[in-house]
Length: 226
Image (cartoon, rainbow, N blue to C red; front, side, top):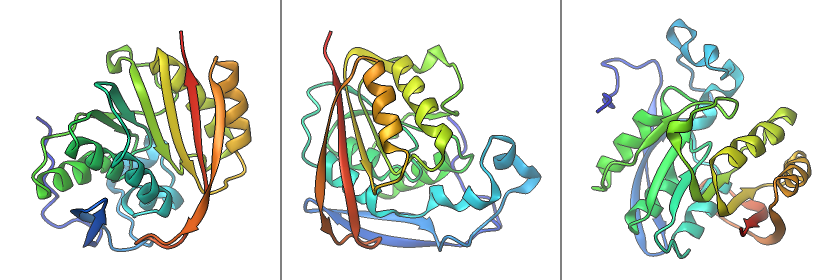
């Protein structure tokens, strides 16, 4: 089992937040703010995480909270589930608390450590973690019937990389749920998913408050039945 304990003197500061999702209370350790940075030996940068993006994994985002709320009510029906670009893995925590067979995935070298700490903090079973980029080819990860994500399309190239990654790891019959706050690359991603055989629809969600600030955006649903 990988060591998920924090370093004796990390170069970043954290805080604990108490969240309430569908009647369940979760305690979540996050970075103190978006100004935190600690990349000794350029470990994250060498994996493709730029210094400007380093802290993004460790903060709570409105879209992540909305995705976690969706996991509180969705029917898993024994489906194997993957959260991509998981960051802190809040949606994975909620899904696991409901008995889902969930795996979290992220490229950031600290994402697994924060997820493991928050899983233990909330007395949940360990969540399998896959560290890697969307351009990596890793057959060992396997395939999933449900793939979820929130606020992952930061750059133009992400749409193509993520759609290809999903195509490699989605079951022939699969569903993909993505919460997006209106980033400009969502249409590119949708077109790429349609080319991979997924039917597409979206729901414009009502503006709502979250512990991370107000959310305004869409829930994208992609479904393939074979």
